[in-house]
Amino acid sequence: MARPRRASLTVLPESVPQYELRATTRGPGRAEYSIWQLPVPATPHVTRPVRVAGLRDRNLELVEHRILRRLAREGVKLLAQTSGSGQPRTYPLSEDAALSIGLLFRCLAPMRNRDRMLAVAEGIEAMEREEAGYWLGMAMHRRNPRRVLMALRCLLTDAGRRG
Image (cartoon, rainbow, N blue to C red):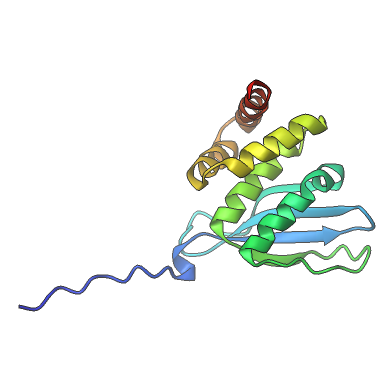
């Protein structure tokens, strides 16, 4: 008796959401990184690139080494840009990296307290893929995303003080 053939579980580029990192340098110490979701058949509601999150200047400098470490694990090496070019370089990102880095960018963008920023960055790094996806989805698709992000910041900074 012939056995039924099983479908292959290979992931095609069209069957998963696609993300990219755009890195721009506007001079010494003035870098900006942003995460964008690209239109692919897996996400029919995305008809043009959608900005997920971005971070720049002082807030980026505080966590840039963490971001570069994460990107290196993904195999992404940021190339040096000419000073003041203003043209972004694009790098493809996996969904896992885009979720955690996008959430990190969204949480840190309005923050000013360095100690709390570090606590939030450490908390987001420790999150599993599903948890980061949940929080980023809440922050992107809720009516009041600032409330969601504030709740996450409170959870992460209070947990750091108790521990």
